[in-house]
Length: 466
Image 1 (cartoon, rainbow, N blue to C red):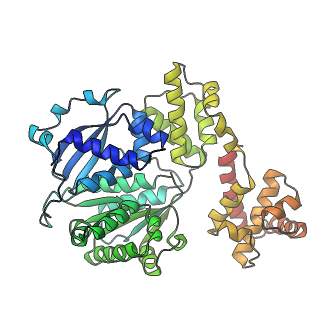
Image 2 (cartoon, helix red, strand yellow):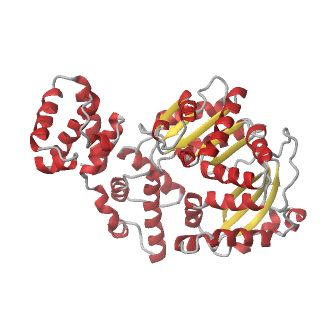
C-alpha cells in the first residue's frame, strides 16, 4: 500500500529512468503532478495537473500511452487518466474539492482479486474527452471515415461492419475518431464496457501477464470485461508472433459475441509487415475507411476551429500561410499553430504574417513540391507502392501510374528527361519521353486517366497553393 504522492513519484521515476536523454520529456513532463484521484463507476481516475494548455497538448500527443503503461504496471485495476490545466504550480490545485478523504489516503499497489465479470467498475477506457465527433472537422479527405465511425458509435455491433479499420498516415485524426467512437458510446450506452488501448500497451500487458503467470486475468480483462474494443496503432502487432495468437483469439471472441471492434493503423492490413494472414483476413472482413491529408480548404477550417478554441485571433493571411505549409499531417498543422501562439505570448507580440513567417521559417520549404511528393501522391491515388513506381514491373495499372507520375513531374517541376528517368529507377530518357506522350494523348481519349489527372492536380494545388 502506498499514498498517492509516493505512487505518482514512482510512476515519474520509472518513466524518466527509461528516457534519460529525452530532453522534451524532461521539459514538458517534469512539471506534471498528480492532483486528484477519484473513484468513479468506471474505475479509479487519476487526474494529472499540468501548467499550460501547451503542456496538455504535448503530453496527450506524445506521452499519454507511456504514462498509462507505467500506471498499469503498478496499479492493476480499472483506471482512467485525465489531464487538467492547473497553472504554473500544479500542486496548488484544489484537490480537496474533487476527492473524498478516503481516496486520498492510499492507493493499493498489490494485485487485486478479479471482480465478477459483470461488475460495473470493469471499464478501463482511458478515453480523451476532448476527442469527440463534435470537435472533429469533416472534409472530403475524411468524410467516409467519420460517417462510418459515427454509424458504429450509434449502434455498436448491431449489423454494422466488424471490425471497422481506420487507415491513414500519422497525425490525420485516426486517434481522434477512435476516441470519438468511445466517448459517443459511453454517453449513449453508459452500461457498455469500453476498452481503448494502443497495440503497444496490449503487447506490453501480454508480456507482463506471461511473466507473472496471469494470462487468465489478461483474457478476463480483454474478453469478458469488455463490450467494445478500440485499438490504436495496430500495425505494431506485426513485431511479435506470440501476441498475434492472443489478438487473433480476442478478435474471434468479439466477433462470435457480436461485439464491436474498431482499430486504427498507419497502413492497410496487407501492408503490415509480419502480420499473420489469418489476422489480416479478419481485419479485412469488415470495413476499411481511409483518411488522407485534407485539401487546403479543410486545413483552413481546422485552423480556424482550433484557433477559436484557444481564444486566438488569426488574420486571414496567417491562416492561409500556416495551412499552405502544413501539408504533412493535422498534428503538424496544430503544432505550427501552437508554436506561433507560444512565441506570441512569450514575446508579447501580436500575431501577424511577419511574426508567423519568422517562427515557422524552417517549415517554408515544405510548401515546395518535390519529385518525392508527386510519387507519393500518385502511389496513394493508384494504391501502389513507391518502390513499384521505380521498378521495371510492366503490369498495366502500374505502368499507367508510373507514366502519370513522370508526366506530372515534368509539368510541375521542369526536370530534364534524364533527371526524371533517374528518379524512377534509372529509366532512360526515351522511356520518359514515351510516357509523357502517352499521358498527353490518353487524357483526351480515356475518361479514367483524365479524371485521375484532375484529382492529382487538385492535390498538387493543395500542396503548393498555386
